[in-house]
Image (cartoon, rainbow, N blue to C red):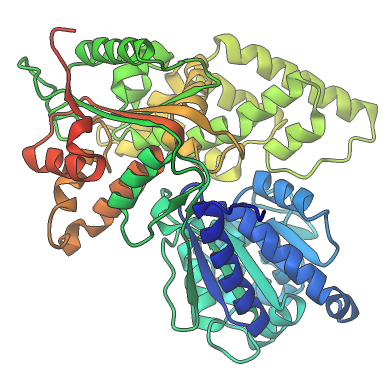
Amino acid sequence: MPDVVSPAEQASQEALANMYECLKGGQSFRLEAGAGAGKTYSLVKALMYLSERHHRDLTRKNQQIACITFTNVAKDEINARTDRSPVIYCDTNHAFCWSLIQGFQKQLRSHLSDSPVWQERIAEAGGLGSRSIEYSLGHRSIKEHSISLGHEDILPLSIKLMENEKFRRLMSARFPIILIDEYQDTDSDWIQAIKNHYLGKDAAPLFGFFGDHWQKIYGNGCGTIDHPAITVIGKKANFRSVKTIVDCLNRMRPDLPQFVSDPDALGDVRVIHSNAWIGDRQAGAHWGGDLPSDVGHALLQRVKHDLTESGWDFSAAKTKVLMLTHRLLASEQGYSSLPGTFRYNESFTKKEHPLIAFLVDELEPACDAFLQRRYGEMFSSLNRAVPLLNRHADKVSWSRAMNSLVELRQNGTVGDIVDHLRQVKHPRLPDALIERDSQAQVVAASQEEDVPPATVEWNKLRAVQYQEIISLRSYLSGFSPFETKHGVKGAEFENVLVVIGRGWNQYNFGEMLELAQAPQVPPAKAAMFERNRNLFYVACSRPKRRLALLFTQKLSDAALGTLSSWFGPDTIQPAEFPV
């Protein structure tokens, strides 16, 4: 008796067949894989197919298939799943671009000379001369015989070099096939350069774009990619969620309907709103309409209790709580002063402030690795090449610096940490942050009256206890929707509770729900609508079996109408007060 193929598997096989046809015919394509569709599986299948089909020719011509990933985690996973094939070059976009541009030293020196961010530095060094251009440590510097590029230099320089015909021929010759993972979050200017110089052109590489533009939640990503030379393949499968949840996603996104693995699997969806609250609500442009923090907290505890009574398991292994509101739990999470430090919560919730990003994404992981004696991982966390520590004195210097840093983290301020890094240079504070810190301290010492808001924020941040940064990192790894997509692969949860309210500069989910009912979103609101809709979709598509949405902001009739349309009228529940 033949095996029964599930609806999701059938949809997956159809998408793979279309992908293979493009690969056979040399046709560039975009594989649109919605939530739970198995995008990485499709990418690995493409790489293995190409490796088996073209291994001999690629080896003979000294060519490789390029696979560009968004994170090092994804790179490591794909390398492992393709057995580290020598005909597959898999790395991040920065590494890929540097592998191509590093041979164009003369052109790089010319472009750096024209770059405003380098001109003062070059003048102080007495010109570029014949210094070699290098990229390893990720921060900008000029030494006697070399120039070190920063991470932020690599993509703009590669974009400039794409205007060079010789460079374009080299890229096509080395990488006749280029597959891009999480295309929607890839730098928009870089993708535009690919469209301008390669797509539809003779002798250009075959491009395969893997991702989902509905899951674009980072500001500088390109979003969707449309071009006459690209064939669009929709992967209409969802291997993650039960039909109850997928039906909601399909009503939310009818142009990419998904099929599930087990149509008979049971699930649960609930939408709880707080419109029955008759007391005062918060005011202000970013907080208007939200419950008072104490009431919101009490409501959240009541909802968690009720869900537990109905069978939810709130252990960390079973349930994820995603917070699309912020002040509600800021004090409990241990970083109560950060909302008052910044004008916009995105500065710390989305790590848009450069110092926050460095501390959370680089310094804290490096400290963790040091404490676990994983020294290679420590340097990797810092986005630095592992330095040569041949001398015993070098090892002692690093060890003392890191031990002092670990101790200072417990009782010092952010400013204490910054000063320590600037003094010992192990690890090194990025040049851009040193410049910002120096400027802020000069302004503070001058006691000027008209201080730029960014400088005020910087000096406020210096005064924050560093323990709040540690607490912020804990929040972001446990509750933030921005950490659910590019984090550890395979981290799925039986249940997801999404708490939705105000407090974000760029987000108002009530307004997004209202606009979703409009015949057409006004052009002036289009970017805001897409940003809100995508984050909402990402949050709602995380669970395998149970989904609950708790709205602490007041919703209009139009917003409730959208929720009823997407999730079904039977799922809508008004919260009872007092809680």
